[in-house]
Image 1 (cartoon, rainbow, N blue to C red):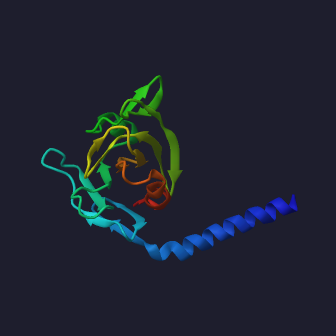
Image 2 (image 1 turned 60 degrees about the horizontal axis):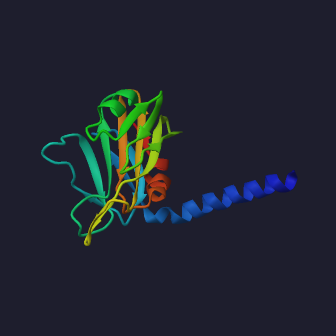
Image 3 (image 1 turned 90 degrees about the horizontal axis):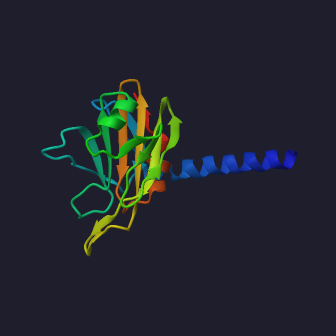
Length: 179
């Protein structure tokens, strides 16, 4: 038993140490207008996003320079979690039989609960397709969809199929704080 406890402590400490050393690769994003802050990989560049028909408050990150579109974005919806999931302009989530699912290309994905730093919500990873220089590939790429809520503010964090979902979960989502 003592060996297992020591092993767990060693794993925890080495994980913290690796995170601290790797923290130089992360930058802090803070937006008082949106009311949130989080860490993101230094190689991500802030990008403009949103269009004429999507006027939600949002911030995007250009992960693949030169393609003109953000691959990761964060949207703030001034409403509770259930309403945000029902009213999302992209209709990503749907409640079926009392459970939320994430609509995907050809298949739906179950959602999992997520919480931390004073917020709660859900996330899903689903096949979403990717667009690249060779065209659109419907079966390629996994997208991450996260909804984090605190009170009457819900943040949707999305990645397209070109960014591995675990990268966004392990940086932005893990460090996300709603102020």
